[in-house]
Amino acid sequence: MPSLPLVGAGPSAAYDPYADYLVYDTFTDDDDTTLPNHTPDKDSIGDGWTDVVAGITIESNKASDNDGSYRSVIDAGDADVTVEATMVIQGGGNGFNGVLIRYKNSTNFLIAGCDVVNDKVTVWRCLASVWAEQAGNAYESFDFTAGETRTVRAVLSGTSIEVFIDGNSEATATVSDFQTETVHGLYNDAAGGGVDATWDNFSIS
Image 1 (cartoon, rainbow, N blue to C red):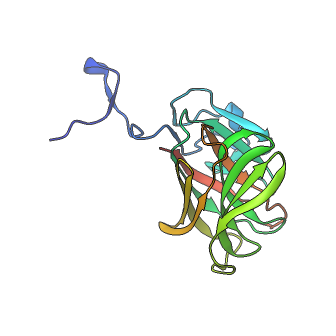
Image 2: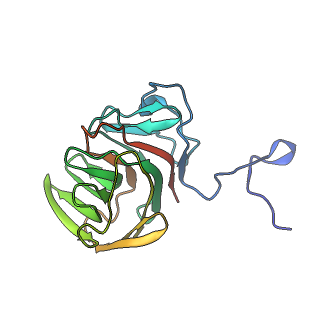
């Protein structure tokens, strides 16, 4: 029988359901709690969440953008990771719901997920505040609807970034920038869609 992942040693050792993760967050907390004031279920580095653009709060045990264009990040200690979250799609505004990956600073980072204006899955790079799409599946391959739930997963390995939606590979990009950046997080710029974008079961492994 395989041994269970444990926290601690001896009689006080306890089963660790997040042993395979660098970060895991079910966003279980009081409503209106800001992410910097919230403790993730697993935080291997221990620095917690940082707001890049403040506004995401806990609502009904999910991270909610409160119908605004906000982003928050957390250090996983590794750049080659899998970042995943269950999202409620918002729609509206510039129209991107997803995850923020390999964040260096507020003007240099990558995003991966759902372009809800063009109904496609894609990766964008922000380099010195200049945006450029790196890869995406066919235009109008999806019909994203405000309020629907999608699982977004970005797999990062060296220059390769592969984006999965609901377990299916939808976009692959080759990006040489930010390969050593270990900070990842939540990204939304689809304010005004009438439905709050939310993230749940956020994980980095």
